Structures are given as C-alpha cells and as structure tokens.
Image (tube, rainbow, N blue to C red; front, side, top):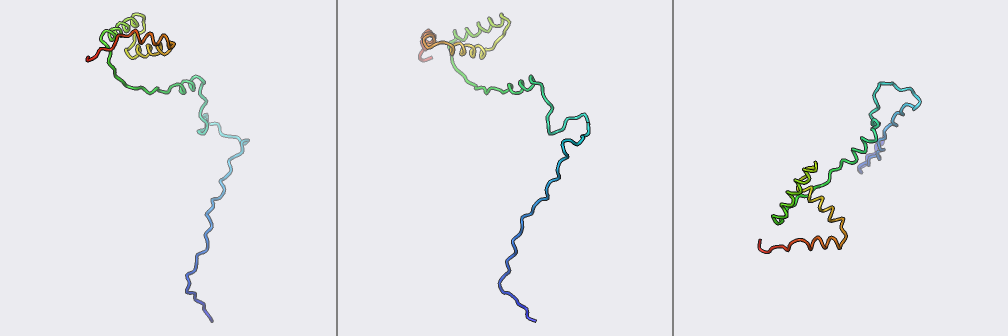
Length: 127
C-alpha cells in the first residue's frame, strides 16, 4: 500500500455563488380576489383633482429677514397707508405695503422708475 502525502497545501475548490430559488409566481390576474372593502396597499386611493392641486400648490416661499432705515416722515406714510387699507376693509402690515410697492415699482418702465427715484429727498449726511 502506498500512500501519497503531499507537502504542498491543497487549494480549496472554487465555491459556487449561492443562488436563490425563483420567487413564487403571483396569482394570475384572472383569479378571483377576496372583496374586503379595502383598497390594496400598493395602490393609493384616488384623490379628487382639487385635493391633488392643493397639495402641489402648498410650497412655502423662503422668506428673508432684513432691516433698513428710512426717514421718519416716510415711515409715517406707512402708518397712513395701513389706516387707509384698514378703512377699505383690507387691514395690512408694513411688510405687505412694502411688497406691494415693490411690485408697482417693478412694473414701471425705466423712465418712470428713474423719475420716482429722483423724486426722493436727498439722503441726509451724518444722521
């Protein structure tokens, strides 16, 4: 009896990748389904068009906080405009009045914008 012993280490046989058995097939679409009165989880309940449109429009606009200085008499104009808008049945805040004014200025052509800026009193120095 001859026994052969190898002094070289044996190399392990390459391993096969583990494979999963195929997933069971889902029931055919023609198979009758139980009626539970609930909608399946995978399909959301249909929403009315108005509800979907409202969800899409509810994006908040990022606001920026800022501060500025203006002459006292021009600041008093803001108070007068607040009183006027309240008298018209639409109370407003200073920020709303400023935003409305910006929209009006943005709608002006270049010549009218320049005239509005030149109508402002000159900036007082040292105050």
